[in-house]
Length: 158
Image 1 (cartoon, one colour):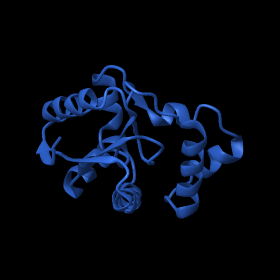
Image 2: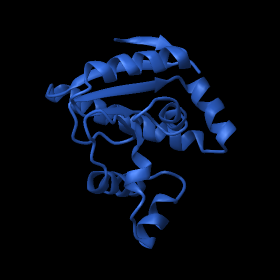
Image 3: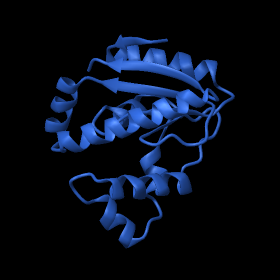
Image 4: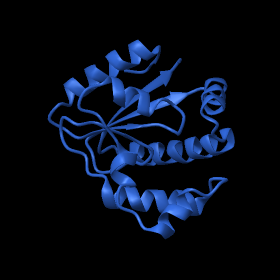
């Protein structure tokens, strides 16, 4: 289901993917400031990986993940927290920035112009969002190469 979608189209497309994989674990992968939290709030039974990953962390882990700019150390710490704390359940798709154990992955892409607008609106670093996006794309490509999951690609317009 490749394509470019408005927010309503994205929700409809995600719901169709979630229905198709209702008995499997689904991850929606996207960089920061892409709209994951907004989509989670609009689609029933979805979960924000951050709510699971960062609910029980040490002060040292918190200090590392709050560092700016985003670095490999920050990314590695986030990855470790996600791998430790995020467990996807069938029927409860998870929106996050790290590919965890699942059967289907949806990559929500966003163009640079729109990402910049979202970052400015949220007072977040565009450079960090781009760095995370590049890391996600590498992880996405590595997992696709293994050919053990279903993959969907959606480009956000809003």
